[in-house]
Image 1 (cartoon, rainbow, N blue to C red):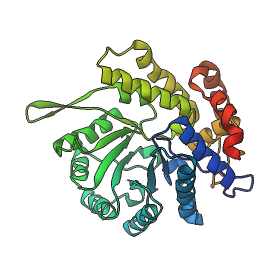
Image 2 (cartoon, rainbow, N blue to C red):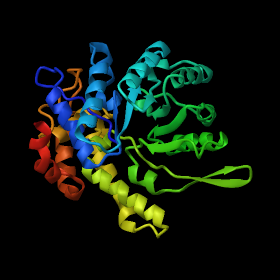
Image 3 (cartoon, helix red, strand yellow):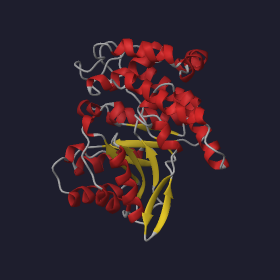
Image 4 (cartoon, helix red, strand yellow):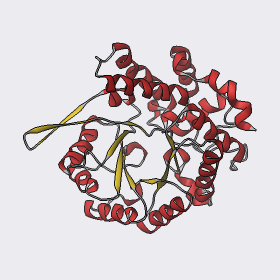
Amino acid sequence: MPAHPLALDENREFDRTRQRALTRYYVDAGSGGVAVGVHTTQFAIRDIGLYEPVLKAAAEDARAWTDRPMVMIAGVAGPTKQTVAEAKIACSHGYHAVLVSMGALRGQSPEQLIAHCRAVAEEMPIIGFYMQSAVGGIDLDANFWREFSCIDNAVAIKMAPFNRYKTLDVMKGVVAANAEDRITLYTGNDDHIVADLITPFDIPRDNKIVRLRIRGGLLGHWSVWTRKAVELLDRVHTVVESGADLPLDLAALDARVTDCNAAFFDVANNFHGCIAGCHEVLRRQNLLETINCLDPDEGLSSGQAEEIDRVYAAHPDLADDDFIADNLERWLA
């Protein structure tokens, strides 16, 4: 599931045509769903009255473009009152679950954070979000994730701490809550996408081993080169479900995908250009007109464009430019 970017024109106004084209791209690329109103969509949409229009646009555009079931996930953020209100908006537009970002609650106790999640879960199914600290996330231990996993209407967790130890904390919490059959795990670890998808995670409980697998990804990285990401995930599922030995060339893709992510997400500059980097790939493919973000100070870092040039040249088989070129006129219509 790609995290849906926000299309802006030269004046930093909402570009409805390009936004629609992006949704159509994700549908035709084979995505299982989209996440809207999340970090990649830019949290600042809430400050300028774009939160509901953007959610409404994605829901309407997906329904109008395909009869195939699409999982629609809405990002919700802010204090509890605001987050609950956003969940109600998402529900009114036919979204299936909300991804709960808790960056605005920094400094609150674990008990307060769980109470926040329970309040949102009274409105809609919730997906936990372990966001990396570099872009505003809060450190959350295994005990927190155990309590989160005990919430009846919690259905999934997106793990994106970009940290193997903290990723394991989520899994330990899920297993401790006996929730492994109810909570679906998604990777948001853009630095280890393939490794997360192919690895069986063995977690002890009561002198036994519980094996977990990450079932998919909810990723900003997958907002670009999406057709190839779908093919990659399909290949992973085929190998895992067959029980065959893991092909080394599939495992080797982890380093190559991470190399691309380093350029797109501007790792060299502590992720400053992570949203603009994805915009730049989409601009090169003519899906976006500009790389503009709502914040004028948010753009490509020095040297980031050259890094994107490099990974395009190094990993051409991971790009889906031809797929987009063949369909762009139809998506923009």
